[in-house]
Every structure is written in structure tokens, then in C-alpha cells.
Length: 122
Image (cartoon, rainbow, N blue to C red; front, top):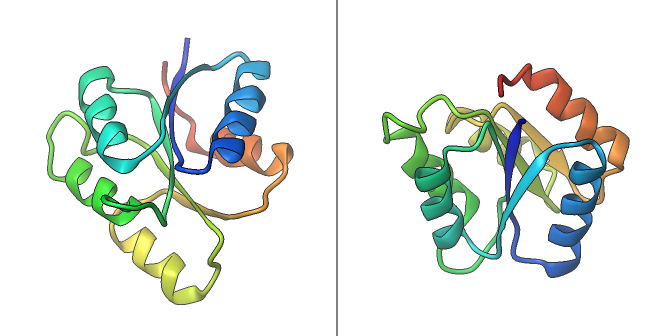
């Protein structure tokens, strides 16, 4: 079964994502901040990470930077979520190694399409 780690500090967004993903038969891990998410990513090595950009303490850019330096997580597919949608923000995320960048609010169809495009292996 494919495991997806959702790192999101907004409770409602995190719960909504978990519900959508579980309805699609994914195993879902959640973290309410970047530090917990980074630890879970290293320990659990999920098949995909969906991460908010803007979080207190360790933001999404810090999470992906750390993951891309670790041999165990260097190639883990990664989708950024953000309320910002400027070209500069998107470019920064993609340069750090994100595979996709979705702007909030998003629809279940958009998140499923982004996941499908990852062609992740379970």
C-alpha cells in the first residue's frame, strides 16, 4: 500500500487531505509541523510527501532541503502546498527538488491528479 506523509500546520487542511487520501486507499501519516514531518519522513520513508510551504519553526523549504541531503529520502516524491502562487515561490520550490506545487485551495481532483502524475511505487 502506498504511504503518503502530509505535513501541514492547519488542522482543517491536514484533516481534509487525510480524508481525501484515505478514500483513495492510501495509507496516510500526518504531521502538524515541519520538525515532526521531517522526523516521520526519515523514520517511515513514505512513498510521497505533501508539505505546506509556510509553517512556523521549520517551513516546507527547510523540510525539502533536509530531505534532499539525506540518502534515504533524496528521491522521495514531494508536492508543495501553498496559499502563495507567485512564479518566484513556485520556482524556488521546484529548484529545491519538489515535483509539484499546488495552490490552496485545491480540489480533491487536483490533489489526486498531482499524485497520479508522480507514478509512485508502493
